[in-house]
Image 1 (cartoon, rainbow, N blue to C red):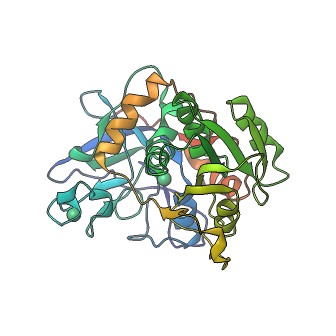
Image 2 (cartoon, helix red, strand yellow):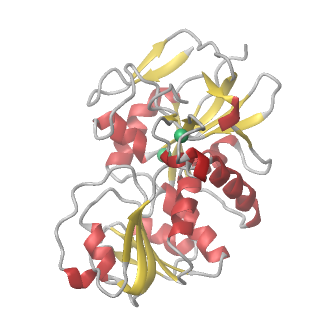
Length: 322
Ligand SMILES: [Zn+2]
Ligand SMILES: [Zn+2]
């Protein structure tokens, strides 16, 4: 099969013909139709997040069909031990032995993949393979971040890419008000945010038009943490939703004072996936997607690094039928 391989961090992905993976016990064989491109893939590509093995097939927003033709999604959480304290308390996202798709096990930048059946979930009709792919990480983990941000009405989204453009729609559906914080000159992201119903879009380093009750930081930029805290009202929660961020500069205690909460969100549970996949058609979430072919995977990552993707990047992968 054709696959995009990460041979070593810092090197461009290499398109190659490799043997099709064979399912082990409990795994199913999947024909990949689309795979979303996540910022985590870029962190793995650039060596900011460590690959579980090399060469590695990236990709953890996999839309595929199993051998019965059933359409399933394969998300970031690939496997957990099921018996540690975290797993037993409903927090399998923090399992100490968790394995992750496209990091510890090969992912979806390929024509075929295998996955543990217990961590795949059925996908609803009504969205195409390419449209639904960004829901599988930006949607799932974005929604976990939104939940953990609390019930605040005035919500700031920092970085308006794949996750934020989905979560903006969910937040509006919940009756919140959305403020989009982007690079000052990113007029395309600002226009996308306003077209989706954000009531304001502007420079992430400055305050918004009014104080925020909650903020989610999707961009991997540590400077945004004190900037977001400064933009909030007392009692607000600021959630860092990414797996990697540049160092956070020091900031005066008064920016955290008055019961502001700063926290991160890590990974997802299967319950998060079920909850979000049921919610998405009710909103209904619509995705803005830029499509790439499998052999353009490196180009998709380059454009993501440059901030040149509107909405979400997705690989459309149509391998030969078996
Ligand atoms: Zn992701
Ligand atoms: Zn565990």
